[in-house]
Image 1: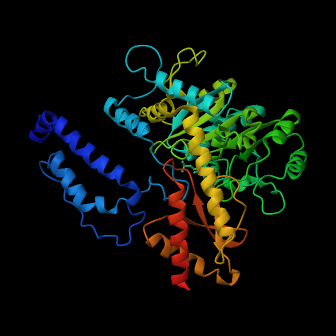
Image 2: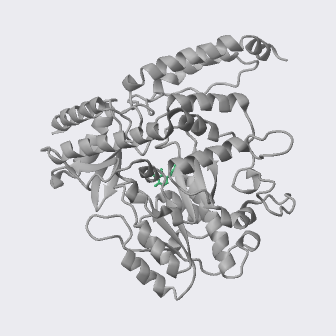
Image 3: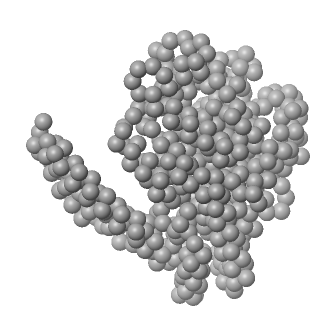
Amino acid sequence: MKEHLKSDLAQIDYLLDLIKKQGVEYLNSIAEQPTSVNDIPVWEKQVLPESGHGTEEALKIFNQRFKPTIVGSSGPRYLGFVTGGTTPASIAGDWLTTIYDQNTQSTKGQGDISANIELESIHLILELLELPHSFLGGFVTGATMSNFTCLAVARQWLGKQQGRDIAKEGISGTMKILSATPHSSSIKSLSVLGLGSNNIIRVKTIEGDREAIDVMDLENEITQLNGLPFILISSGGTVNTVDFDDFKEIKRLKEIYNFWWHIDAAFGGFAACSDAYKHLVEGWEYADSITVDCHKWLNVPYESAVFLIKEQYKMLQVETFQNSNAPYLGDPLENFGYLNFLPENSRRLKALPAWFSIMAYGKEGYQSIIDGNISLAKQLGHWLENSNDFKLLAPVRLNTVCFSLKDDEKQDEVGKFLEALNNTGKVFMTPTFYNGKKGIRAAFVNWMSTEKDIQLIFDTMNEVVKEIK
Ligand SMILES: *Cc1c(COP(=O)(O)O)cnc(C)c1O
C-alpha cells in the first residue's frame, strides 16, 4: 500500500472528524452562506500529483481553491429552479450510502441484497404520497431520468399495441404523443428515446392564464387519432405556475380510450401530503407511470428521484431494460433485480437518504414542510401583489411565486433587477418567460425556510428595485 493510502487508513477517524467539523460549521451557518458567487476566480489547472497529497492536504487545497465558491443552495433562501434542501436525517443516510458503498441490484441470493432497502423506501414513499401499492418503483438520478424511464416503458407499450417489439426492432411507424405543457426534460427524453421531440401533439391549455390541459381539446385530439393508441404526458405541477392537469377527467378518458398515461409530478406530487392541497392530485393513482423527484420536496441530497410504474407492466419494463446477457427471467419479480428494470447497471444505494428522512420525520414531518412552504409562497405572493413595484404573472397555486416588475414598459429591466437581486447573495431566484413576458420564479421547497426569510427576501427585493430605478 502506498504511503498516503496507508496513513489515511491509519487516521480515518481523524480525517472524518475534520470533514464532520467542516460540515457542521457549514450547516450551522447555512442561512448566512452567500447564495451566489460574484467574483468567479480564474483557476489554474492542477498538474497530476506524482505521489499525491494525502486527504488532509487535499482538503486544504480544496478549501483554498473551491470552498469559497460553494453557494448555500440547500439553504432557506435559495429559491432558484426547484432546489430542495437536505434534512439532517437525509445527510446521515447519504453518508452511510457512501460508507457502505453497496451496488444495489438484488433482494435475494448471495452478496449484496440492499435492493430490499430500496423496495422498502419505495413502499414508504407510496404511503407518504397516498398511492396504491400497485406501483413498482425504483430510484434514479433525477426527474429527467425518471421521465426517461417511464417513457421508455410507455414506448414499449405503444409498440406492443401495434404488434411491434421496439426494444428489439427499433422504432418504426408513427408514435403519437399528446401533451399540453410538458417539462423540458420530457421533451429531451422523447429525443433520446427516438420518439422525436417534434412528434408531440400540443393540446391546448385551459383558457385564462393556465398551463393545465384543456380536457375538451384533449378529447378532440384523441378522436382525431381514430383509435390509434398514444402516450399522454400530463403535468402534476408545471414549473412556472404549478398548474395541475385534471386527473379525474383524464381517468374518465382513460376508461374510453387506449393510451399510456404518464404524470410528471416531480415536485407537485407532494401536494398529496397536504390535507388542503391533496385534491390537486386526486385520481393520479390511475396513471400508468409517475415521476417524483426526491431531491426537490423530499429534501434529500442530489441525485435522487423515483419512477413509479404500474407493476402490471413489469414484462414491458424488463423487455426495455433487460441486459442482453441476462438469462430469460420467467417472472422477473421472483428473482428481482434492478439491473433489468432501469437504465443503469451499477448504482449506489440512492434510497438510503430518503429512507432515513421518511423514517426520521414521518408523515407529519413532511406535512409540515409542505404546508409550511406553501404558506410562505402564498404570503410572499400576497406582498408582491400589493406592492407598487411588482406583480404576479400567475396566481400562487402552490409553492412557487411567478412574478415580474409591475411596469410592463420595464420589461428590459427584469433581467437587470434579477441580476442585482442575486448579487446580494441573500436570495437566489431564476428567470423565466411566461405568457410572452419576462418573469422571475421563486420556488419554496426547503424545510428550513421561515417567515423571517421571506421578510428578508421582500425587504431585499424592495431595496434592489429602488437601486436600479
Ligand atoms: C425539476 C423537474 C424535472 C427535472 O428534474 P431533474 O431532477 O432536474 O432531472 C422534470 N419535471 C418537472 C416538473 C420538474 O420540476
